[in-house]
Length: 239
Image (cartoon, rainbow, N blue to C red; front, top):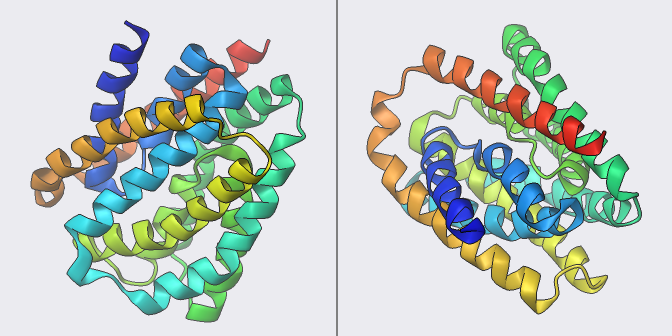
């Protein structure tokens, strides 16, 4: 029953991220922590995120901005490896607290970034990629931050979804490589990640049909609620 619940949530999370480019990690992480524990949940989510990004790349392949993707990944991937190494030496309870605080704080931070309406050049994108990559190595998902970054480049709909996914793919590959190197991806966890990721991929394909119909204001409020709920769950789990 635990696996069935993870698959159902994974399907819904994949559909959500297939529409807006993020959200699967935010929805899935509390479920994975409950089912597998916080330290196992992070590498499982890394595998699932790889598969989620791959599905969006396949869906919108022709619209990827490869220059933006390269600028973001070239610094983000090594920074993510460093962040993942940092995560593996942290105490379990501290991981819970960090995840919970991150999700809660992302609610006001996301709106602050949106109000700034900043525009990034490619070299600025590379600098931002390093910071986001390091955070992704530690806190599972930085979608609420990377979304306004890629939107500031003028990318919309399919081009935004695919470019953000292609850039994030390199970051999650680096993170997964660190987990593998330090023994955090044994066969059981790898299998759990592939099972969860398959549900997320299926949901991403289902979500494509809703891309043009999404109400941005409604979704913004929904994601605020999801992030706040996920953060409070992680903090309650820690204490």
